[in-house]
Length: 70
Length: 196
Image (cartoon, rainbow over all chains, first blue to last red):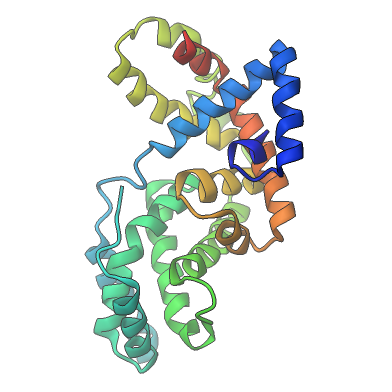
């Protein structure tokens, strides 16, 4: 089902899954929930807004200098 | 969503300068990628302090290993690979959970239907989903969690995500499916409410 939702199934396998879910309410329900789950996941922000990239860069450079001094 | 602020050509130029010892160029690369790396580390299961420390370690290792970076893969994929390894290393160092250090809200997923019943507004559900997702991800085994994080939250392609996790694509797809199915089961009450 994951491969189907990722458009990663060959046509034959895709058609077989579609035939099955048309007849099987349980699998149709699972597929629908997976589809909703992926839509929600893909809509999530990528990271916390509090992340300060320049602060991490400063800390990284400080560490590089510290290790170079030893 | 953190969109790239430099284009691929600019990034290649910065990498070349950084390889030559230009710290300013490397600092630009860190600033460009740190939010994505930090976000992935948090979602791999590290707390904010751990994620901050490990993000620094990821970039220190990247600096030291820049000469080994082969530009067949994207720089971001290479960083995710280092982040994945470093997160696993940090998680392995944690003491095993005991009753005294279990989080208080460990049954939050089980309590989901009641929580949702008190918040009918869609935007409230969206906010709650983020919190529920964080808790549900924490319940997944590390390899399955990483698959979902890399592919579905960080937005890597299957090929890139498999490379970052250090496994073949077929194995990665299996992990991804199992991770999604476990997450679906944990969040089922929410997903059913969405459907309704």
